[in-house]
Image (cartoon, rainbow, N blue to C red; front, side, top):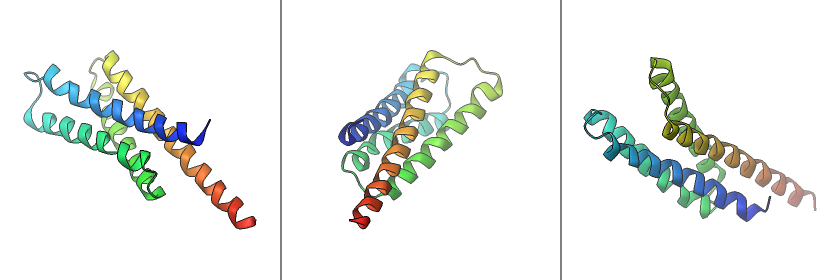
Length: 123
């Protein structure tokens, strides 16, 4: 895959996951508590923000933080939804797919960057 496409694909994944997290708030406004609402707003805005370091190709540290943060969101979802016996929706699955794709794409970006740096040092 073209390097530029990797960055855009990762940015799109985190953006879509963030937008879907934000979409949960008005969809379930009456059913969720204030702290859960704040959690979805903050996680959604953070994921949307994360497209900036990805598109601008900031240092690998940003990708590691993005991977860790997204992994934490996935773990929280596993504990809060299927782990608590709640029904898993299509929206849940869609968000998780985009988050897992983001993690995989960031890992590929980091790996390619390391290989590129190693190859530059050889020549």
